[in-house]
Image (cartoon, rainbow, N blue to C red; front, side):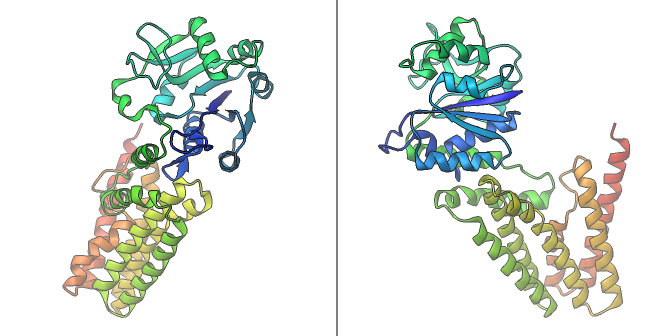
Length: 386
């Protein structure tokens, strides 16, 4: 099994009495972000090495526990050994470390004891050799922590553990050049907030299909840093998406097709923003619900346009387009979507030019043909997939 050991003992550089690990970081706290990376790497237990408990740390522990892992706070190596399984592999995270999931995964893939190192003479990292610094991540056996447990308790836990692991001949893994810009030790609240917003945005998965990517995820991602900095609640954007989306459906049913479709597109953008905020803050249920709001609004816009035609042909085209769109969404989960593929999110965008020239039947026909063509290619892709 894989466990994580996060050190949280140092105060923030610019906030006396506040642990650096509990500073805001991209809508979370730094320690929550580190725990998320460890969980993504396969950790099923998180151990927090602390010097004292603070309200911010207690809140972070509670939120980490909601992700389905056990979380324990310890003060000494002896307590850490008591909490860990004797055969566990432990990913160690230095106090104040900012890094990426790829870097954590690089170390987690090793089999023996390993240290992530850098050759830079940067004072933020502890030196372990003449020209080598520890880069803040290590993969070790529980036995190394046991070695620390038998030493005097007034020794610094993190530094002592590092020395023991290094002296035991742990393999040294060089920090990749490409990862250096997103890797370091930081305890200044303002610098950490700026850094956190930039890194967290890159964590958001960018959809493959053009409408989901460029009309929803990309603009929502650009708006994310200032929203996170201001602590914007996801529920506000969820409410906005619902109100704007329903207003769009109502406008279409009232024969204001252009206005309605523009409102639907705005509603999809608000829903995507709300989904990103909820995902980053571990609001599991809202995140799952918001993930389908965009496609639902897209399907609703198609059905509303079909109703606005006041004809059986319009209804038939709308139903066919929605059915084909739903099938595309299902197939896209199993296939590797291509950039040009249709999606339910794309439906109001595709219909908008036809709505401007008052051609609702042509809009429905175009959406249906687009979805049918995508479905045919998607099925062919699945058939050819090994």
